[in-house]
Image 1 (tube, rainbow, N blue to C red):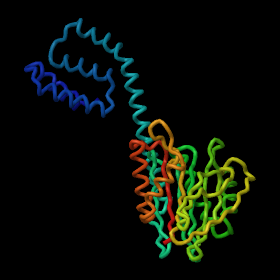
Image 2: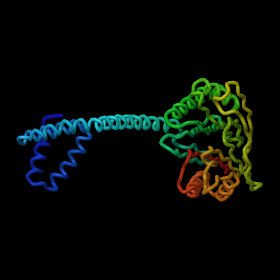
Image 3: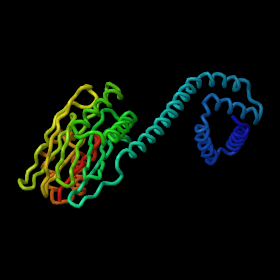
Image 4: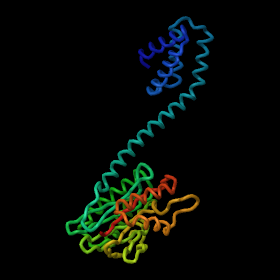
Length: 332
């Protein structure tokens, strides 16, 4: 403890003993906050007070002796103080690491959606906490293909962000070598199985949309099934697709499916944070979700995605228990 602090405390104590005013009590509170920031322990504060009393005049022997007892009593407080300080330091470090991971995660997803003359794209992705376990990506190709990824990674935090980074760069390195979504999932499965913790796995839908032929070829790895709306029939259908989640079995194989979109048709991809939502005492059913989707069919893809998110958030009393991601393609 510096000499300057001691002098300041002596002056504060002298002023208070002379007048016992409210100003000195307020100054003492502010000094206490400052000493806390300087990591001054309770034992050090007792020593400071004892030295200040001796500086102001003769201290009776019984008062001087009492400080020894007080110091021993405050040792346990000091230990707790150091423990709290240590936890606070670790928490700050954790928050710093989370901020870095969050920034890294944002860099892994597209910042702008591509624009096409005959296809609208809408997207809403909201993390339940600071870092999302949902991952999505949209990659355009010169031949008119639009490759879409939507996935859910078990676990949260830094491990999820690192897994997203691995998935992104694995897909980019494989994108020009593979012919179909089934092959992509098969290779990604090997990458995930070899490189993430055995307790983690990834569900994913990966597909390529041909913006010229309006054909969507895709494969599924244990992911929440999406919807296809057929404008001519005025009806929603569940998308087909089954398959083992990535990272569970190294030799998993995946089936490719194909959906053709006519004018007015809508393709809806999502994570389970959309469907597994508690409303009151029960969970949202897929047929209920369809009814909410039907109410938004007259809007653009982005407005449809925004409105549905707002409506579901209101129904669940603004609670978001899981990461929420919905991607909508609408042929115009």
